[in-house]
Image (cartoon, rainbow, N blue to C red; front, side):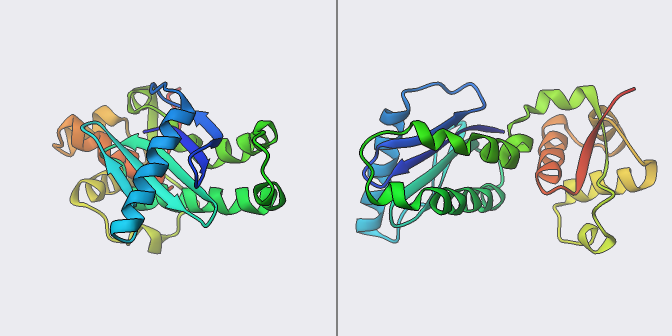
Length: 203
């Protein structure tokens, strides 16, 4: 699950922040710390692509003027989230290139990014617990070759069940595919993030 996203100047000042989960800290303190980690990593190596704690991962993408960071659960897929961050960072630079060149400390107009960011990240900010109130089905927009991509064994079990039954609840997946609840939740979340499956309300 996605908890926060920050876009910061390479010098640490927070330009944009959206909170989706339960982590609530001063954004300038967070971005200053994360930017300092990135600068240090660039001096000793090729930079930092993520920082991991016991429960969370802070996933980075950088440009010549900004650092964009997402805080997600440490079981989430780095590549999927980083790809979204790169798109968001590119759009941010496209919209605010002039402001970034001569930034004078004001951040209010950067909030115009909120709708774009929310639209891209909404599916990553849904707690796993919400899955119990919905059924899952294969995304009809996904063609057969997409379902043939390489997936983990747990993800393959979820796909196989949905191909056979048409739709299923998370509880069905746990019982019928003999997965423990944690593995079923993780496989389901990953497939939702990749748009291979989708949620539908239980009628």
